[in-house]
Image (tube, rainbow, N blue to C red; front, side, top):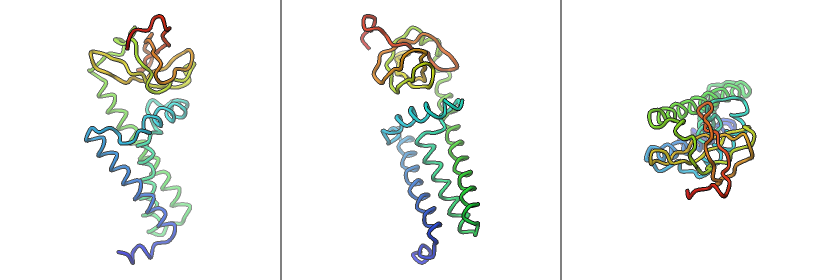
Length: 201
């Protein structure tokens, strides 16, 4: 076994360590998720909100492409495919291009899986129209002028939900109390509540 690793080229070794590290993180994250212990990474929510809001929304994607789990999946398949391609004698540039394509495909598949799982979880539970007029609290910041998507925590049917939200007015920060005024394209439209109108949340 040791002789096998000694015979690896520097490129093969690089791909191997990328794949090994990302696979370990991917497995740990999956275990945390399926054991209902959360994502295991506090940064996941921040990256989901910030990266998705800045990139995915700006290019018109209906799902979160650039999430932590998607990026980990990208590096996992990028590393393993790069390792296998280079071991089979493909030149450096072709290996890199094919690995990028494989990693991007993996990131897309993971994003689509979580997108449809979230949609299935939402369907049948609540109607977004029921949120109109209700108050909530901003969980992930919402950019101003409908320039991106954030998340709002809101109680519906005695259950706390985290819903995608946009605003047409000022930027809303984490912790702001907001009111739902409309629903557009499976997203709630919110406005910041005036201090005099805020109820105890």
